[in-house]
Length: 403
Image (cartoon, rainbow, N blue to C red):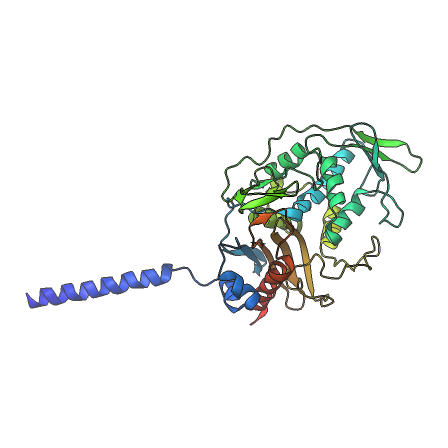
């Protein structure tokens, strides 16, 4: 009997040890993002103390290469594809890419136009809206120059012209076909704009002969009607100079998840990792053009030239450098698109440390609207939002490059 009891006791002890071992083995290991957040400076730590209030979402994907094979290792913090945040100007990223894709499609149909072909924009009543670009050295309005402006200074007009060149339904259908299911672009960045009917476009040669004419494209889209978390935000908003004491409704605003933003960037840099039907239909020349201008600082261009006024090198580079001026170097290249509006600051980037050959995708968003009122232009972009993204970028870079 004693032997039997001793044996059972040993068995129970072994079973308890085995269960504890399994629990330890199955527990989630600390990720590089976890360590980066833990070691980040006060600009991150203070925000993390109120992570729900700031509606923080972060996604980090390391790009690793083992025995000649690419590997993507993803970690995240509070990331939720179904939790809405306003993407602001990050919406310009897919539009710039799709504009080049449409040009390739038109070329295949026999139209002799490309990204440098000049064009003019006419409204639905036949009134010319634009036929030149004063920021271009040659004064010509072209798709290529508009894309440059989108990446250099996040120009709203450039986005608006490309948005209507594509047409709202065609934009969203194209993104859905690529597998970007958490993206819906509803509107231009122009108050009072007609988002249901596009402008007309005429591409022409040096003799003013029409090479391609595009009439108005109507949209049948109904907007971002999906049931998303936090689609109503805040405690009020300003309308006609008065504060309305009701949450602001974002159901008919643009939408892009962090995973889709990363997916768009990944298709530009690692298209071979996607099925052919999930890739943008672009040439290598198109991809190189996008990569080049996506990585330029605002001051690394002479055409257009932004070496004046309030522009500085990190004007649209929030990760790592957003809270500094004149500190950017060639050692670190940031291929990105930022957005900030309605109190929301977002950056989606592919970052390459050329000294250590460290490569990673980093996307993050933060809501900085302390008074909970939208449309009052009282947001903490410069004091909390951009410094948070800058420190986050530095913390992640340090974590991934420190032996």
